[in-house]
Amino acid sequence: MDWEELFADRVEAIGVSDLDGLFALIEKPEVISFAAGVPCASSYPIDRIKAVVDHTFATDIVQALGYGADRGWSPLREWVAEHVGTVEGLSAGKDNILITSGSLHAFDLISKILISPGDTVLVEEPSYLAAIQTLRSYQAQIVSIPMDDGGVDVGRMEGILNVLKRSRIKPKFFYTISSFQNPTGITLSGERRPRLAELLRSHRVVLVEDNTYGELYFEGEPLPSVSSYMPEGAIYMGTFSKIFAPGVRLGWAVAHPQVIDKMAIGMQCTDQCPNSFTQRIVYEYARRGWIGEQVSRATKIYKRKRDLMLKALKKHLPSEADWTVPRGGFFLWVRLPKDVDTYTMFKPAVEEELVAYAAGSSFYPDRRRTSELRLAYSQVQPELIEEGISRLGRAIEKHRTRPSP
Ligand SMILES: Cc1ncc(COP(=O)(O)O)c(C=O)c1O
Image 1 (tube, rainbow, N blue to C red):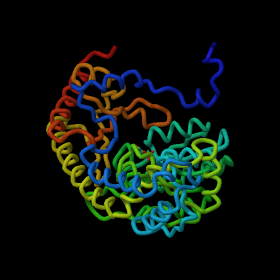
Image 2 (cartoon, rainbow, N blue to C red; image 1 turned 90 degrees about the vertical axis):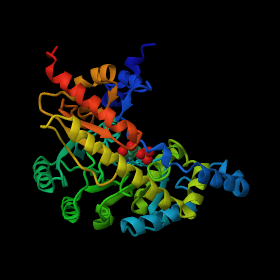
Image 3 (cartoon, rainbow, N blue to C red; image 1 turned 135 degrees about the horizontal axis):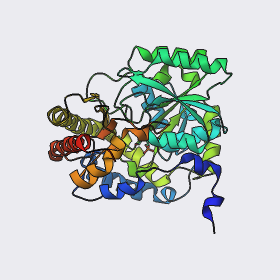
């Protein structure tokens, strides 16, 4: 069978990651990897998780093993509605909530119900790799909006929206990771949030706000979500992956009931309903107030790791390099001298220096070569951070002195 001939156009549109083969190398235990943005395993409170699993077995196991409602289990939807009201200032009832298999699943459903092939979607530049791939799979035209250390540049966005308007292009939505962004760690400033909402409202562009990391702040005060400034035109996404554990595969979307209804129909075509078993576990865990306790323990761990990484970067990276200083979340973004191509440096860095990172090119929709890279400090053991960054420093040094192929 000639499979290549049979694959749909959308598969071609997603493309392949050139780094796929190299990820096998990262698996080697001797490699210190800052590549993957995953939670710190020591933040999982195994005993407490066992207690809520036991509770589910004792009280509700038959329902937990069955199919459930497509929009999610009512007690969990109610908990999420209350939670987003408290932490995000979003006024939501159960009918505004859809439980999904993680926030990426929510993003896929949003893309499914809003994007027709060729539609334009706005994203931050750079943006989350999997979201870019999702948009490609729905054959969207991706237009990216530059960022600076205060988040997306609202003035330049206005210019871009006006240019698009003159060409009669109406973007379907703007996708933002408003706090502790993946990949940069940047947070949209408090001053820009209402301005962004106003701009989107005036151009009648939907806001899709991904707040996967928003609760993991270790400095400053949490900012109100952008959605809270334009609830009528916003779809907000959150997840239990970073405040509980990603293996439960549970997240949520908050939107107008009309949008939730369409997303639920989209879900019927894929997984029918979210996981009945893990919904009960997470609900019971949350009901006991353990999420908040886990978050406050985890953020202390992440802050310590961030500080260790900042110190090591100062010591081991070339003086022309600079980096973001995130106040929460998992990532920071490093800008190296222009003669470094972090894409070609990746293989020798892993093979020779035994250190891995995520090359900047992965986070640009046009896959441009850059001298930037993303470092995740969330998962690496604290005692390995300095050693890993010193290896990175050596990889950069070698790359700069090596004759180009
Ligand atoms: C910005 C962003 N959105 C969504 C996700 C997906 O999270 P989930 O596990 O909830 O699907 C991630 C995961 O790394 C992420 O970084």
